Length: 392
Image (cartoon, rainbow, N blue to C red; front, side, top):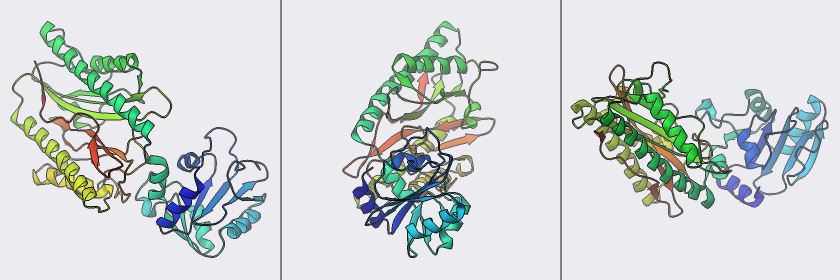
């Protein structure tokens, strides 16, 4: 934990201090920022307050008195709930703005970790609670050079495995021994393992109307054969099988044959153009030195889909943060499921993946990963799909 860096960030965020609170290892974000383990006994509440300037204060229970000993600052102890309230009031001092893992109206559920009762307790002392959302992004969601390198390495491998998967379909067409969605999914999983990659789940492989469910998952029983005339979507994500590695997550669309239906081509071009519009908007804002939040990029993408007449069929956010988990803890590209007001800053990695999902017909999605580098410029970390892949 870099105390000086955290205190400078607290001041820049307009807060007087940052209060960390945990019970039973519920605040995984705070634990990671403070360099604490998710393992071990955590049967009592603890608090750690970092002021914008001055010495931090920690409050631990006498049953687990060493819980915060690795952290700098003076230590207070409690046994009873009355003593807890008294000491917490003392450690926070006069009424001030206190950042916590809280999101007003649960607008950003990823950061909404502190329970309502604890919020009530801190407010009862006269403090104003503000969200720590951007602070958490700065210390938990921004990639270092090692993480970025691992992401790019994974990307090259995943891109190659996607090509192999399309070739497996192509070979099955020529032999007329058609592969199923499940078999292609399993093929990708085996290629991940052979290439030193790991994933939290196997890829989405679906034909025709199956991907109209954005998180369709093929199963061995009832899996369709991939045949001529089929629309095909593959969404795959993986990372190097090493500690600290960062995920790479993409979705591509294909057609089994040489002459895809006009409606399918049109839908793909709409999501492709929406993806391009969001990326262009992001770099224009970053290039002008303006702040930009995830919800604004979502709007830039979504407006393209709406203007093309497919707005009702774009049923999820435009993108998500990417980190050691495929759905990371940084800003999402979202003004649909939530209004993500977190700022996109250097070190952020996220997906851009607009989609169109028409029940009974098709699901179309175009996904790439974007990283904001130290020059405040967004770069695409892999390939960009410009046209449908034709498999024949």
